[in-house]
Length: 173
Image (cartoon, rainbow, N blue to C red; front, side, top):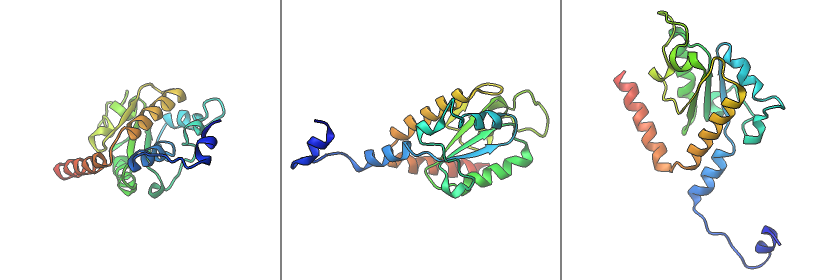
């Protein structure tokens, strides 16, 4: 009656290879957690049974950047730490995405000092910003949904253009 009945005969599916690849990419986003301060507790809470990040295929938080395609930066980033965050981002394979979680990550938050970066978009290309101090876990899940939609609607050529844009930004800084 369902899909099995359609496949039992001489039927076949017609689709684009890019659509299958994007479907697989968006349903298996592996986050690289960069829990630098208090927002990291809320990021960890997104994995508990109440919020259940596993529904989105992102429960496997890898601590190896070479196995991740999404970096979640959660917390206050200092200039000394920004070099480490950028180095980890550079080690991630392409295509890759970034979520800036919390007010401190996005704008420096309440810390207006010489040592705190006033927004990680100064050294990383951010795809989604999560508001709040600290943001709730369901806000992080909403950002993950936005990333999945972005992945599903992106063509392979756009990934190549994003990489060229990042290289131009790095060379200009």
